[in-house]
Image (cartoon, rainbow, N blue to C red; front, side, top):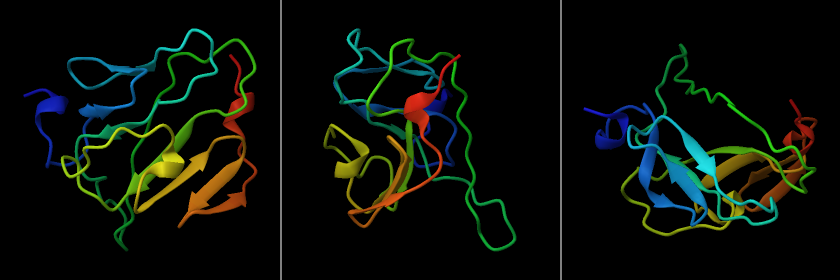
Length: 131
């Protein structure tokens, strides 16, 4: 079965729904692409197809993403990674940004961590990522 077809199991790819209106996910769930030619539109939220695997001795979760390409023009915000306590399949809403996802923690943007609707500056700023 493809990663996209195994919702409810351990995270193995991206969920095919719900998707931001400018995101495409490959049919096997392994690639997600934001399709905004201007680089100014949001709606790039995509979810995983299962819970993050717990790998550490104290129950730490772990997942990886690999960037295949970055935009060549400067962006106000960059890549955002996050987690939520909600199970895949329990989320049906389409979100414009990670800020809007309930019960979630996210980091990236332009050097921010967002937790419980509070913004905290961090040193990682993915809006400056370049090839």
